[in-house]
Length: 268
Image 1 (cartoon, rainbow, N blue to C red):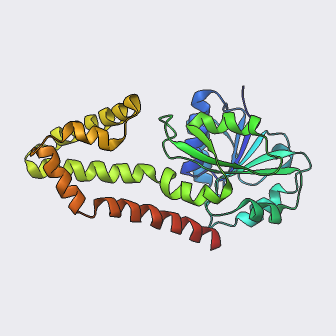
Image 2: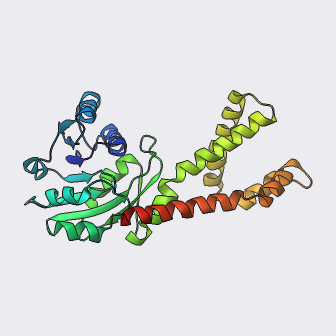
Image 3: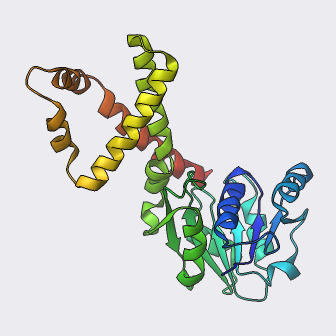
């Protein structure tokens, strides 16, 4: 199944989504149109992926697609773009990835019942097939059309809109927490006397193996920690240091700060 997608905003997130969808065969170069204000960006997308590109919004083309992907930032003039989309006379599914902008805000600007809005918070692991995108369907939005597209760049979690900001700060920013943990762990290995190459490969292998073990056993992390923490051993000693530190609170505070910032962006 090939979906025809008109993307407004050809930034890195839009590119990542379209690249993954193209790789999965959900879209093709011929079925993908991108509009952006940057001619340099359009030239790049055309040369790399052979997407159709336009400098300005074309209503006649937009009326013939399955999905319009609204891929701009919350600080961009998204209201003007929604007004342009709202001139379409046919029914169309519009997916917004604008952080912090609600379905009510989108619909109040549109005032066109033919425009069926869906909000998604896309994950940033699109090329891997991992990661969850948070999806909230608006009134009349078609899950049959939306779901295959979203699942072409990861997994889809259909959630109430009140969880979207939480999803952004926790799920979509999730790789940031992992990258920071990996960096801290590898630096610790180097500090202890390993080479950078040794520290990197050991940490990466432990991350992959630990995640696989969590999934395969279904056990609580405390149960798995008990396997490694023998009485008076190095495992329980390092556990004491972690428990005495601000490690857990630091991660939790970072998540709450990211969620709070997402909410702020929607108000600016």
